[in-house]
View 1 (tube, rainbow, N blue to C red):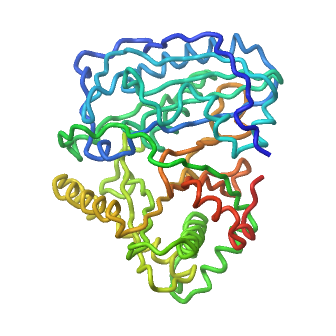
View 2 (tube, helix red, strand yellow):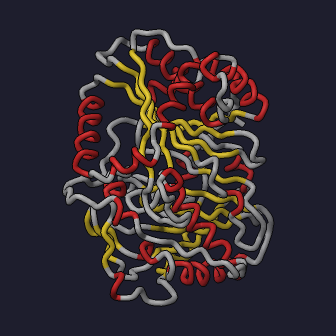
Amino acid sequence: MEMINSLKIEIISTETIKPSSPTPSTHRHHKLSFLDQFAPASYTPLLFFYPGDADHRDRCRKLKESLAETLSRFYLLAGTLVEDYLVECNDEGVAFSEARVSGSLSEVMENPNDVASLNRLLPFPPDAVLERECILGVQYNVFECGGAVIGLCVTHKVVDGTSASMFTKAWASTCRGDSQYPIVPTFDATDLFPAIEIRGNKRQSRMHKMITRRFIFNKSNIAALKNQANSAALFLNQPPPSRVESVSGFLWNRFIALSHQKTPTKAKRFTVIQVVNLRNRMNPPLPHHSFGNIWWSATADVPIDEKQDFPSLVGKIREAIQEIDDEYTKTLQDTEKSLRAKMKMGERLYSGEVEMFSFTSWCNFPVYETDFGWEKPTWFCTPGRPYKNVVLFVNTSDGEGIEAWVNMEENDMALFENDSELLSFTSSS
């Protein structure tokens, strides 16, 4: 049963949190990288759920003080995105709102598909178009039951998932007083992937109504999928399929089945893109704390008129990911060539020649380690994307399963969420 936006939320206060020390004039302007420019033009939502009763006034004070201190290191987040290739590091600051929420934390956690209510715990909607192109917003939500939710929206034009989890980990450690080994980001990606001046690439509104649903793959169901995929001869003398490879291949298989249920289209190929972190694929590897969008899409595709089994789809995803090595990343540094490849894929997609599905995994990110001094979160989610056929994977709170957040057009989701084979491997709670 969905709550249908039934939460009553009252904003108590809003103030701007500026870095505790001013950004040096030598860092006033930061050019984005080529990879930043082609990141999605929307905000990434992050919600951290913390149960229990506490002195929320004291918590809120500590959150603001530690945020100011953390922003002095992550100074880009307190700036303004003035063009699609430039951040003005002007210390404008981050809007921090405190809100009171009716009801209990458990009500929200038991209704994960009520994305409208989840979005109200954020400082603004993920697809918002704001007066100022702010990079980060924060909302601290206090529930009647005493629990709290920290909601963040951070622009994907500046921050990828690795960078977002890096920042929240740094903020949390500062808040709880663990400053022995402070996380200090580096902003060096632009040197490797220089930007191209591309104007007019602004945030776009949704073309169709998107529906988000969460599907949970528990430990036993993931094990069954891994065994099924690993039974194929193509995995002989190779490491067995990973959790993410297996779930990705399975969902791709079900997306293909869904497409065959619909009215035939002129699409000739089913394409999957899997987001790959480039930091440890370069030689030498980039520093672990390299900040920005440092990822690229591994692309696998199959003909639309050929039957594909689940293990072969897993194999194609693995092959595509393995292709992104040091030599591949060097080709990305030819930004003009990479731009032409991006444009060609875009033309194929918008012409209808290709039907695309996109997977992003946050399963390696330490989101459940985000302890602000009042224990680790009981639940983390990053719900809703304003794009169709996009799937985001996050660990379940026990670290054993995977939550797949699937975003589809309304008509497609009506078919997909009732797929019998999908339901045999998943649950919604």
